[in-house]
Image (cartoon, rainbow, N blue to C red):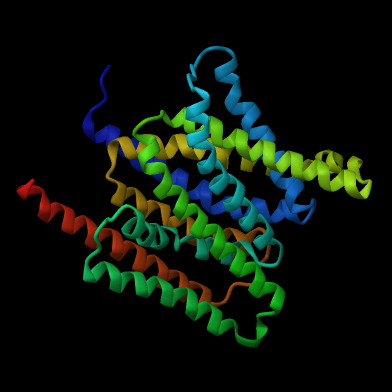
Length: 313
């Protein structure tokens, strides 16, 4: 039985909200794991499990993957940008920062995406979009200034790494656009996860072997809370969220979807304060609102421009 347009759109909105919640809480679970294991081990376990789960339908033939070596060489650079660099910067950044700050900085991703797209894809931006971009940047600067002397060198390093991870994520989005026209989402997901699993596990094993602590590679897996967090990051945050986003985007415009994505920033702040008892001040919320307002303004002004351009097409 075919669903009505209203019901379908309602399910799409629901998928978008759940997606935002999963991404928002992912910073919290990532922070919990780096408190138990070395960041490289966390990444190794996360992507090994994620690759294992995503490979199940491929192994049983439910989903068919047909890629040549030439195809792999085209997709591998995407995997090096994300997950390798993106998650490496994010995980190490969370060692000396909190999940609330990670969620706030991650909200800058659409801003960096728009900048990189204008440079590499020659996408044009309006004056209003540029002003809203500056508003989002002002939100991050405001948080830095308000932290003042309370910001240690280690904390500054963590935030710098989180910024780099966000830039890598934006770069991934720009690089992925031409590839999504040639390859299926499952093909890109499978290859990029494989790149992440290989790089992080090889790095982890080499690190442990060099210092004679190979047993520590599997030691965290005996911790129930660690296993639960890794399962959340590998299955929900890495895989399920991608499926939710794909479903929502089949029924909602990208600009509408981005509105829900920005809910993840507020969810990460609330989750960090409630579950991890992280200190959250008023300036965190003010900075977050500035960033979200800037991102929404950038998206909506861009949407208005595209709608005005449509009749001429």
